[in-house]
Image (cartoon, rainbow, N blue to C red; front, side, top):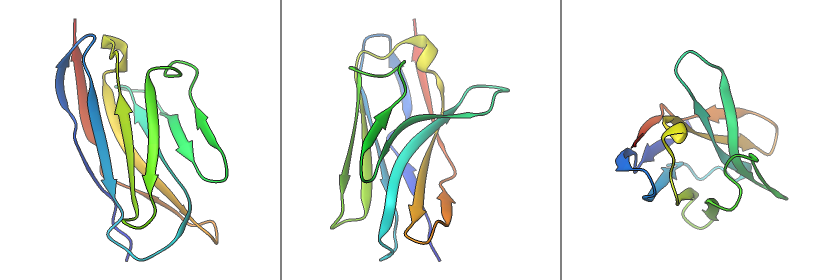
Length: 113
């Protein structure tokens, strides 16, 4: 069974940085791995996704960087120049090579002004 475990969330001041990690804890080879976030009361939105290509939400381009360690089946999200509007629950996402989607339980990122 695939389990995605996020870590690295927390409280940071505006302008600061955080690094999120997601460990897949599975030998499954994923076609894509990435990060979504959910603001209070809203739907989840894509933050960054890496597979054959890498895509970022416009709101995080130039500030966030996604990277992946295939040997460890881990995906990271380096978040720099954080803004209060980045405050959200961040979810790890992975898609298997047959199209099955998996989600982590989420990690809260809070950016204070």
